[in-house]
Image (cartoon, rainbow, N blue to C red; front, side, top):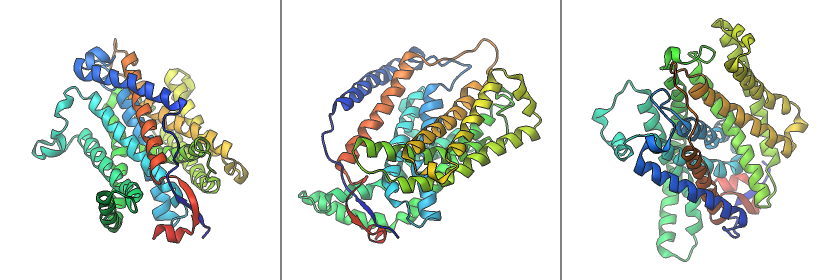
Length: 399
């Protein structure tokens, strides 16, 4: 195996001019969150009885959790396929997932009318409705947030192994070996839980029956949600790795990102082919020729899903960092568009209902994204997440 670079804190100032802007956006979002919690959904959102799922679900939860599947996607490569070849990408991928899912959980809390009763969901198990797709989603997301922070905990504790604080040093040296011994079970849960709730997000919309437009209404919706979440997770790893290298003036992991791109190409082709075959079998493929709004949205989805496969078809294009980033952005947008379409565009609640996010809804979403950026920058500056420092053999770092 080739040597790779050990993870180390990036260091540097946290409050740069760009971070001040991000903190300002977070502050505005925090004020909107406080208003929502005090005034309620009716005063702060444009949601209604026809559209009970709005921006906070369609983007913050449904799309946000898929974008936060970088840890899930890389785990497939690292622990199943490539025997540690991509291990330098694991730490930032898990961190991105932990932050993304934590904020998605906040999005769910904001979207629930009586948010103060959420704590009852994991505890009052005798009241559970075992026929509810939402129950599975809620429990899986809650559990996965815990799993992700347990996964990232050894990397955070590494900072204190040789530190001056005796209490933290003792905690780190005691906890890290225990966490490493249980890692196989944590990784297994980390593979199982996203598989369950990402597919269940698709199942949830199948319950809408005729209200979901026939172009999207297929029993394969759960599978398409799962497959696109994997491709979006890969894309986020590419995006995060490239921009971390740019923002922190580090060398990008181009060869590893090229290896990820080699998996993305066939996956995108398979998703497009399956969707076309599915529409053909159900007899709705001809509806694309109508060229109305929904047909055009389907065509745009398919074009965006296929575009990265074309962009990354040649080995030379997969080794161009700029090309990788552009294709990753297209891939993220394609998956996000599919989810928005299923939850909002394809959903028909009946006549006289309409929905467009209110200004507070948009500002809350911007605030949550800003919070994730702030937390990410703070952690990578102070904890060994990104590759940096001395060069070591992969076997030694994995030990």
